[in-house]
Amino acid sequence: VQLQASGGGLVQAGDSLRLSCAAAGRFVRTTSNNGMGWFRQAPGEEREFVASISWRGGSTYYSDSVRGRFTISRDYSANTLYLQMNSLKTEDTAVYYCAAARGASASSRPADYNYWGQGTLVTVSS
Image 1: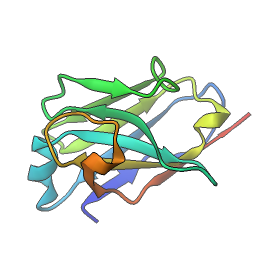
Image 2: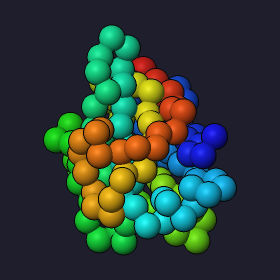
Image 3: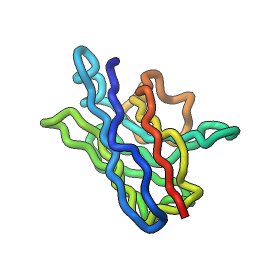
Image 4: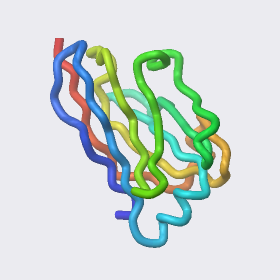
């Protein structure tokens, strides 16, 4: 697996979680030079954009539903992408996927991403 997502789990509403996405092998160079993003998919729903970050980290974008609660960041030395999730809500329950974009920009479009991690499940109980 070239992109390994981790950090999901079962939490209560209002709690925090931090997701990680580690790049391995030849994808280390790819993810260092490309935009990265987080998407999520709830049961019975389509995959939706959560957050993205440009290759230099200078630009970040968030969906309206998570802006102000989630923070995307990247550690180039560790080849890792993060998603800090605070004030979690039950509607945040989903499988979260990290992805590497084709280009350097941050994007909200799934079609702009060509490498995907396997997903990590986040369950928020009330």
